[in-house]
Length: 226
Image (cartoon, rainbow, N blue to C red; front, side, top):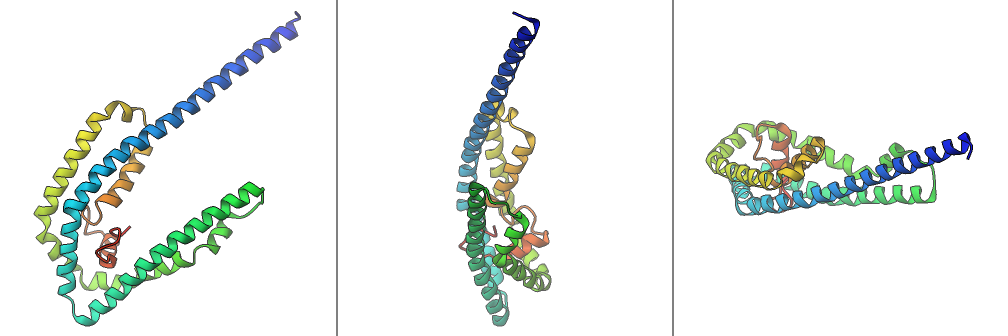
C-alpha cells in the first residue's frame, strides 16, 4: 500500500470519527431539548394551577373594582377597546399561522422570497393591534393613580402568591438540578421569561407602562394580557 493510499485511509477514518462525534452531539442536543421541554412543562403545569387558584381571582377582583370606579362613558369606551383587542389577538394569531405556512410552502418548492416583504403582507392585524395599544395610553395616564391604589389593596395577597410561586420553582429546580446543569443558560432564561408572562401577568411590575396597558385591555376571561 502506497503512502498516498495510507494517507487516504487515515483521512477516511478521521472523517468517519468526526461525523460520528458530530452526529452524537446533535443527538444529545436533541435529547436535551426534549428533556428540557418535558421538565419545563411540569413547572408550567404547577404554576398554571397556582395562577388559576389564586392569581386569576385577585386579578378579576382588581378589574371589577377598577371598572366599577369608572364613569359610564369611559367604561363603555374601555370595553369597546377590550373587545377589539380580544378579536384582533385571534386574527393576529391566524395571520401569523398563515405567514408560517406560506414560508414552509416557498421553502418546500424552492422558491426564493424576501422574508421581510412576505411578513409585511401578513401584518395587517398586528398593525391594528398596535393601534389599540396606543389608544389605551390615555386611559393608562388618566387612571394610573387609581390603578396603583387598587393594586396596593392586593399587595399582601400577591406577596403570598409570590411566596408560593418561589417555593414551587425552588422545589422544581432542586428536583431537576442535574438536568438543568446541562441546559444552556440562555435557553433557561428564555423559558423562564415565557413562563413569567403566561403565569404571572401584571403581578411582577404593575408600575410598568406596558403591563398597565395589558391589564386595562384584559377582558377578565381570555389569557391575561398575552
